[in-house]
Length: 391
Image 1 (cartoon, rainbow, N blue to C red):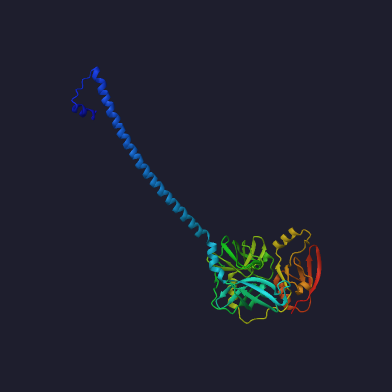
Image 2 (cartoon, rainbow, N blue to C red):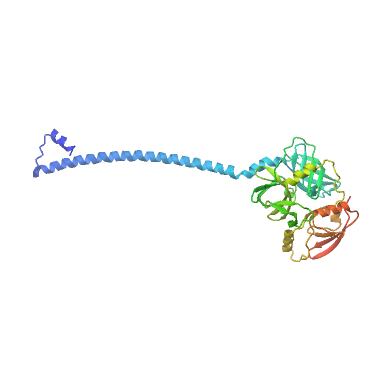
């Protein structure tokens, strides 16, 4: 009505409410209401368009923000879950590949010196001092030790010291300013911690395997290793032949152990780094003579778990076998090869004395002369072999 009255006054229309004028008045009223609704619709449409634009802009901004958040999140995940790669980047330059070669024997196919054994190690002093397992380098007379660095360069090495009980040894190469491995502590290791095993399993250089600490202190008696009086770090990180002597590294890039042996899949052991520190502190660079008597085998000490696995593979294996060493590899042309020893044989006694570990073999080689009478289990058979170690 507020819009109609001014129009009526302007047109000088008298609102006479009879039958004739009622239709005209109503028509005018309807006309006014129509345009008022039309204006309201235009206004509403304009507001909706503006609102839609605002909502679209906000939605676009939110999508951009969400994309940024997702990208940031993915980047954060990469940084968070690539911690193993960070450890490797820090530690790998100090890890080395060790190869023992016999210059007197040549490979029939390559014409090069036969490789007697191989293993891993890591630099502990920048002046060329390298740590490894004793079983990697002992009992290899007339052989040369070669060390291959991460950059691919190869250097002749000499054995400076070794200890068969702890299975540790030091080598030295004539190279200075080498990157060194930081030594951590094995005293505060906790089960469940992430660890990285580094080395050259099966001669595959610069190999990395990952696992956790299964047990921080596994006694040697539990492994069937008599006379050791040591504890070991148990891990599920794979450690195989050739990996021996390499470092077991924590997430700070520190060596907390030395890879030593594998019992079965998911069960491997490392020598705690605190033993290593004690060995290095007492070690003397006197160049002691490495054992002069040579067999030519790669072996591993039998443990209850290894025996169980062997019996699963060979049900005919005698059930009374409780100790010994398992022959893993026999060097062609070596005394063991010429004496009839084969991969898979189990040596239980030598010269009537029981054999419990690889260390017993090394001790017998150093403390005896002449032939070695070995009682060997092969499949279901027991045979006696006579082997003459090489000088």
